[in-house]
Image 1: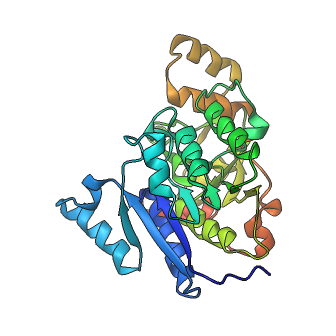
Image 2 (image 1 turned 45 degrees about the vertical axis):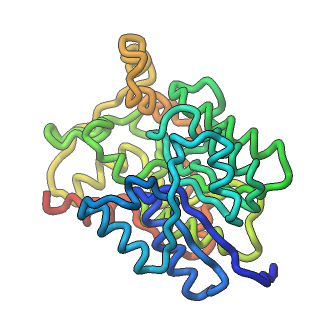
Image 3 (image 1 turned 180 degrees about the vertical axis):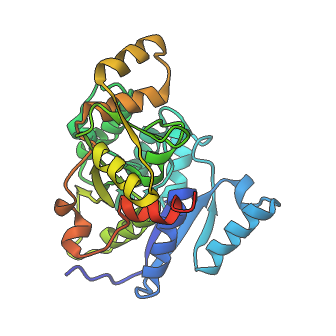
Length: 311
């Protein structure tokens, strides 16, 4: 077992929906490992905001022992960002696609330039290696660029946590899979296609567990899952729990390809087309880290019970 003889410092980039959960569980773990120090990088406008909600969120982080560092990942150039990251042993990026094209590779290059010992990139999603380059969702290619950068070097350890999509996104009206106004499940590809989903809370809990796992996970992709479910099974669960019928409608690859031809810049259509292809977007829960470690996660049925039962 690896023994540490000094404080290990961990920096989380961002405290949004996922970052807040990663920080919360890391802080909990740090209580049993006092030689671990947890920090979060927030934009100066956020860290010093007078907005009551932002102040409460920042104060809550401080109350659980999180140190606040200031910096703007998007605005900073690679050298400036490397200087921000250099004091830390482990850097976890919870800055997602909304930060803009090129941000993922910039953060990765900065982490490598800074010489951090371990880097966890924003790859909390699908199996990009299996999907490959040139998929319907072009932003996925940058995720492969990140993996190429990490695999081409030996100085910085890396860890990728593959989670599938956020569970809540499966039910987002804009995503279109579940139409609650008409009680229709639109199956991406076909009703037998499967999708892996995990809640941000479970991702935070599992990421903390993987980071502190012994033996240490080095230069590897770790798969986790809250649930893996087909669209047909999703419709069945909605009917069972909500007590009303749901129509089933298949959005085939052909249907989505035609829609993309008419609207080639539609990001949601790109996501739908990737999931309709059914490649690299699902893996058996029985093969995951959480299953092997006996860690319970929130499945789709439980999420529906908690969030939709009274709707």
